[in-house]
Length: 409
Image (cartoon, rainbow, N blue to C red; front, side):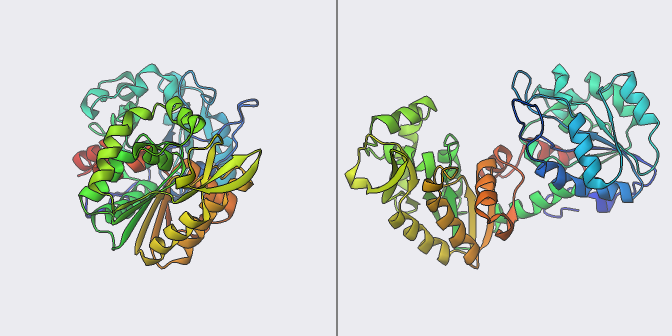
């Protein structure tokens, strides 16, 4: 049981011989030319929950998605089943059907301890409609499969900000509704980080997805969750721009292309209110013909692209991290993929992992940077989520979490 939220877990149900539907998030990077999986980290993460279901002799039916319709990574889950078979060292059956006769027959034929992966649920048009659980329960997906279901196990925290059919539709009709091990772990850690973090608490916001940075900054500062926010990447550029710093035409065009300029007034207001809490770069690294050159903020504008925080900024941020008891990081400090512009991110990673603070990182680019630079195993906790993590930190809950609280009784 997740006591703080009143949500049942696998510890609270008997599952031997029962048909357990487990909704996971297998959504993985795909090689766009070969359509093959580039990384199976999420499959490995969820394999812990699936392995436990197998060991406890459940009949395991997996629901998952891959990509979005119309996008290049929207592919079948057949290879996912093969990867999972390798990880579990047992056959994971696959059926290229979601709720038709072929899928229902395969589910009915499952024996205790066997695993079946259904086809990509997003291949059914009704999956991505954003509706409450009670409406999704009337859908074709749920109506066809519900008679075969005993326990519905939600493990896909990374998709918990989406009230989609396979995420919430089975909850009103299942005999038992529980959180899987990934969902359980995420909620326990994030509940503590958001509701009772040890102070000083430092948030580090970077990367290229700056659209949520103002809302997240306001949420954690206004509620006394964070003591300081350190900025890097395009988030820092946007905040500097909102502070009337002239970045140079090329850097402003990057913000404009991302449609960030409309956030200027909101961020300016935020900076006025929390001027001493939000730290902006003192210097930045620019790309001069592929080489790194550091310049102070007073020396802007520049005709060159800003690609990292500078040394002085790294030292300032490191001093704040050293004093912290809790550190939450979402987004790298610069273009870490280029070796010349990875030092800012690496310095921050080193400062976090050398400190005594409880550290949480999340988001695809942050995790990719931590993996590339050799720090991934050194953080206290690595969240599987990106968008769901940010939304949870802003709002303190998610649509799927609210549904779990309602139906996990």
